[in-house]
Image (cartoon, rainbow, N blue to C red; front, side, top):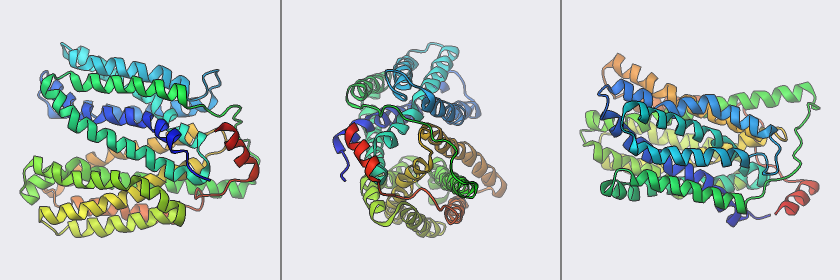
Length: 404
């Protein structure tokens, strides 16, 4: 059984289109907001709208897509509504002439992105056999990382030419991706929702695995998001380096993640998803614990390359475990659970570490805090007993071949 890479890359265009928007949005929207308001607190609050909407709306639309049945499929209607709407309002953001219009464009764009994010991601387990989902998720995340590189690199050049060009580029890419997905990805037909037929003890065990897996996701994103948010300030105040240099140092982490996204899926195919994640957590701790004491930017960069590799082992294989636990016909709802916990961490963690920093008066505890997040995630993973790679039975394999 081999992964259909052509179909997976086309499927990854949905994640690619979303991933190219956020770096542009996060880089340039604060600049636009600052033209109207000077409060850093207010700007920061506006920039959390995407995560707040992810917590509220992505589980809702993910579950709704499970119950949708149209001639366009279950997931595609949400893309057909959300993508064009997001593209339109993304392109309108740089044309805002007041704070009211800018906020209106931002809010509608974020809502539109929430409409299609979970249904798009749920397409992967819908059309990918269980043993191949880590590989497929590696390809999709590789495309997401590649989109970020384009957004930062080409987007920066376009912004210098015209402040609206990066937003127009992202909008065009979203629409092109939607067209390709619509014409080349065919959803499975006649998906039935699994009924409650299993014995109660087995249901309880599976539910416990789901809860601890979601908690693990929350804890490792808690550690990761603190480093992502505060590393530039850590670099400035603790390492004594410029913010631009801090960004370059942190890029080594992101670059290693992108480069290792696809291999991480292959490793899980050999070792199993849970074991691969556990090795990733151990590796992340072997990186973050020494960073508590190291003050040399070059050594930190080298360690963060290893950190990016270990983060790929964790991140690439976590969603496939959640999708594996989903009853038939409920992948969208479980995708929503995944985004609820990861997005909640993105909201809570910067606030929590910011409070710790104010309490101790220093950014020094950053990597202690991050390490604690991964320790708690490691503990939670010990209670996850479901969701690993499984083989297809004959009927399932025949069904997959029929869809291809």
